[in-house]
Image (tube, rainbow, N blue to C red; front, side, top):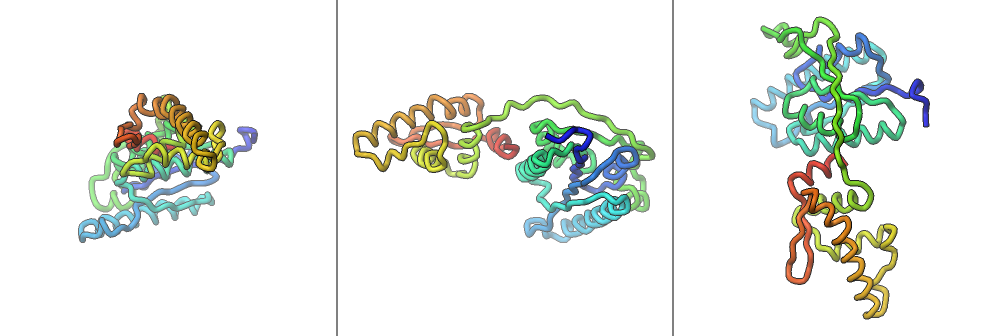
Length: 267
């Protein structure tokens, strides 16, 4: 483990129509690398009005990028659908996990984007227990010139509020694996399909490929494994409200819930 003093300091900034709120922290705070997340160009946002908004966004993208470049800070640019909460939570979580593997000290700016995106950003940052901060505005832009220079918010100084995290009880181990597998199957996942997948991945406690055994042993192992899944990880995920379990004839079918989709996105 790297010493905290040697850890690289990384900031993640999802960006809306802001400049001051994105860059003022670096008047006082150090950064070795900045992940800048901005709106992607997508067919579903292709109306003339939406194209004008995207063009406006590109102005702030370039303004912030030029300033960061002038400070000599490494910048990594990401494009995303910033109106899709699950996609944003997933992207944020992936960046955080990648940086944690590098032993980076991670800071997230939740104030330089719109409120909708800010919700996803805050959820992901708190779920992964990284440092979250809000840049307070002194006032708001009153005309086109101020907006083009500062963004929607004007920050005359670096006024940062550090937010306290609260703990998320995220599933781990096999529970997490199962949740993610169900997340990838929007039409539902049958218990037998889940069991085959777990065995093929060599999960501890599920090593025997029962389908290769004689019929009597095959049925016994399959039944025992399915019972262990039902009474263990599946029951825990159902009680947490992340999945539902139903019977389709003799077969068990699993569906993810709305809450489960949010949790899977940060996992």
